[in-house]
View 1 (cartoon, rainbow, N blue to C red):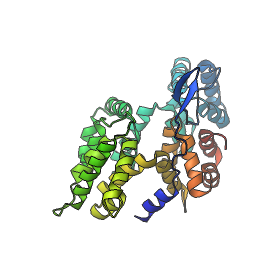
View 2: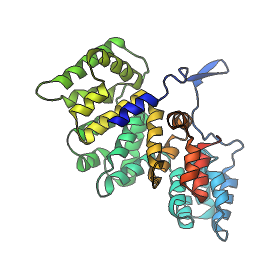
View 3: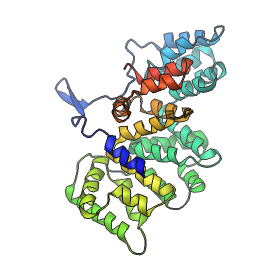
View 4: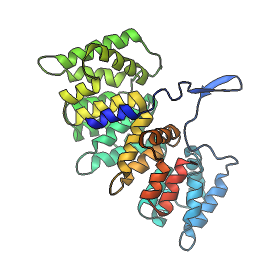
Length: 345
């Protein structure tokens, strides 16, 4: 896949190896989200302002935008509770009636909790005519073990069916096996790199790909879905010492269809998750037409995780900012919400 070679050529390596910051003598993870808790937060005032803007003649979308993009998700959940208690109806239902098209979609996405939003995205990806495999892999490969468990719980609560059962019904073969492996939520997350394990895994993967009777997909699935990103990166380096071709190229040569795309996406996420999302955003906005679902999904879901990193990778990879492309590809209050999520540039 030519895009894979281009992807690894353009991504930023070791941009900021120190992922911590010292606060009051203690090291804490740096924050790479674009939406932070709003200071002097008052859910009653926000709920009242939202109600007034929704009930005003013509709907005051400026107020809706200013509140939704300047409150983090935890604060939005509190606004929802207060709104329902004072207005007598759910905020998401009120916005659904007041807004239209993509503005409605992004506003409702911002009101969902992260787990509920992911569950909704998965349900949408599996209910349409033909499963959206890319969305499933994106979510399962980039969420933490804790987040995967929360998604499974939210999915069961919202749709009264186990997520694993849906995956078995809507997918097939090795692709199903890979998705179910990720749903086990037992990926190593300690961040430490074991060079000896990487050497061993590289040997296993090499043998699995060089098997005369055909590629051993199970070995690839087992290692790629259970190792941490840093550990896999070390494994890729060890693999390069054993083979004349890179691991991604080996997957490209030996596999076809959904399982190939799935495992290559896992490799991309392990190597550089923000660059993985930057590439997806670029594909959503390049050429004629814009994939609004992708824009909303990525910007909302990563806004309190690593969207700053994604924006940096995007500019480095494509020599243009996400905000510039949003300005060219979208319009109106929908554009304002997306720009608000991205923050200043």
